[in-house]
Length: 55
Image 1: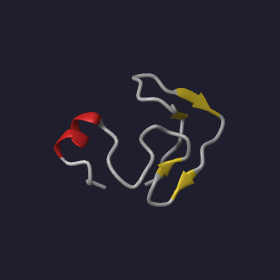
Image 2: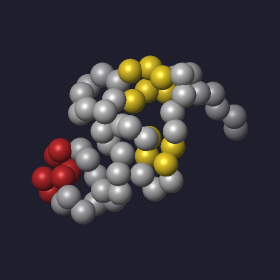
Image 3: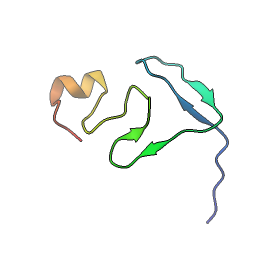
Image 4: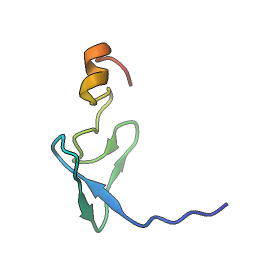
């Protein structure tokens, strides 16, 4: 099965909207470079409240 990437987006802040990008850089084990959700642990506020050590 083949897929297609139609858009890549990121935001440095926790917002509902992210900006379209011409390219992104993926960091192994961390996520999208420069995105508010990147990192070794969970960044979603509701999940951080339950257990901030979640990957």
